[in-house]
Amino acid sequence: QALAHAWFTKSVPARQPKELDLQVLSRLRTFRRLNKFKQVALSIIVSMLTDSAVAQGRQMFSDLDRDGDGFVTIKELREGMERMRVKKSNIEEETQQIFRAEEKKRATSALKVLRKRNSFIEDSKLPPFTYTEFLAATFDRAKHTTEAVCRTAFLLFDKDGSGQLDKNELLDGRLLGELTAEEAEQLVNDLDADGDCEISFKEFMVLMAPEPE
Image (cartoon, rainbow, N blue to C red):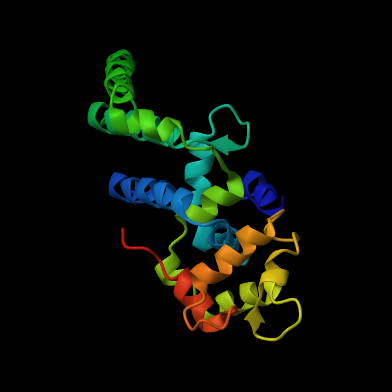
């Protein structure tokens, strides 16, 4: 909620080049493949970052949420990127009004082609992103998932302050929502590299390392 408030009330810098948009598309797809624990941990981390660290994602979310419903789909992102590409290729000066009608015509044609692609159809099946999820998926993790930030996030899960996360702490429901005992146990087993049935901070740091793009 606080993040959403910041989005509505604070000014944001201009959009970055299209190459960066393609990187964001990759990050959004990757985020949907992450387990629930990592998605929540990234959402916690992004809530602690400075405005400048999330400015790019905030601006893009604002641009893409055309109906203002607070959600953005990858489908909307791809359509927005296509509109941007057509606009850049057609309009060189704001005073050249003659290009406006042609821009709209070519954008409509390009979107029709885009919507027929198999990858676009598959992207349409992915759940929409909330504002916080969008920021969690798109911020520069290589730059901002520092040990200090990750430790703060880890401590929010570590209820007893033991430096280890066990199944019961994941079942708390406060951060991860409702999990079954089997889901929590599987989550611990997936992340437990040393076989002690708990997640250490070192193991948590390995989990938070960014995936190759």
